[in-house]
Image 1 (cartoon, rainbow, N blue to C red):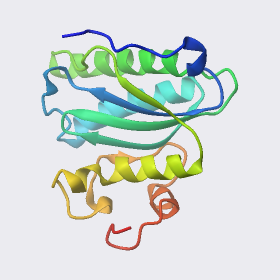
Image 2 (image 1 turned 90 degrees about the vertical axis):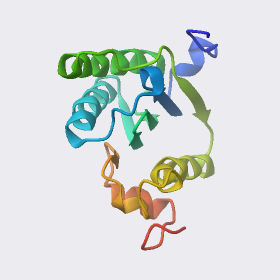
Image 3 (image 1 turned 180 degrees about the vertical axis):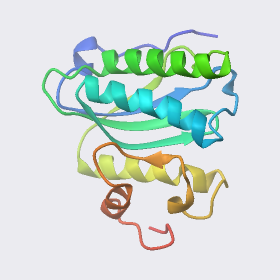
Image 4 (image 1 turned 120 degrees about the vertical axis):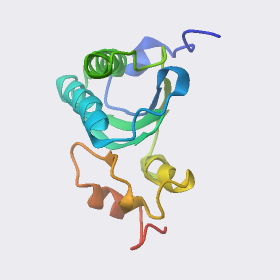
Length: 166
């Protein structure tokens, strides 16, 4: 198994862009099943986002992975540095709490272009628990959110009707 995915040109990770990221739990263990664990990891990811000038447009902690849609807030925002710090901080906090490593090496990424792509990715992220059969409606899942926007506003922007249906 390869430890690292091939990365794009490092210059593409800097600047005013949006990135769809997925971090997978080591061994794909289902660790994100309680509010305490999710809170510890989420807080470190959101802290890193703020420190590296990113808004987290949407996030969703599934049992064995987390999806993030981040948006740079400054020209010099560096997504690669954010990811490194977010995984390091959250992994350390998790390890202190649970005594085991958290993340698989590397991460999955996609650079977004255009508003339609943004809304499509937001919908994908927030509907993930419904597709997995964890909840009946997106608003029922407790481990989804956003850093700069109210989750209700994010869902409305993605054109949800009441009950979690598009």
